[in-house]
Image (cartoon, rainbow, N blue to C red; front, top):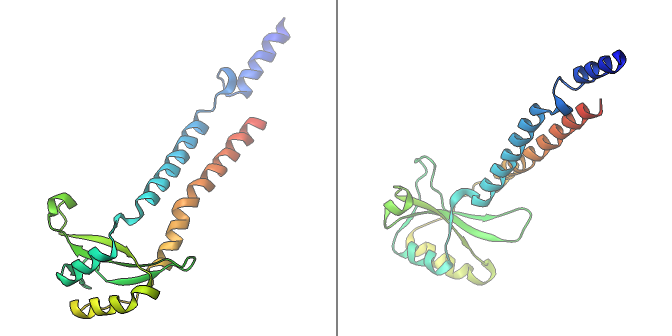
Length: 173
């Protein structure tokens, strides 16, 4: 009888003093990791907040002088021809003047992306840019953003795996 009481008190001490040894720290850390994963997926879904506009609208904006190029502003507003290293997709990225800034969170300019197939539209694109007096700026944007994308997407998963390891390591002992 006395041995049973001693065994129960030792079991309570080994389990952290609670019934069943519930690990609150593990649950809190696990919820933080899941929150970081959700945040990474949410920010990846927004992809920088640029509007995708068709090529015809890009031409209209260029002819109407609504495409903005300003190197000195923060953030700098460039017109770029972007091709990612791992795909053949090419798009034009830049900034345009918004007709109604109230719909754009009070901002006068908005980012845009226009998918383009250079094999078919190169001559038309050159002509449109010449009429609007615009040129493309060379800048390595995709390579720099690639590491940030990798870190923001995989870091929460690595943190989750590490926390699960700590949680299960504690349970095995």
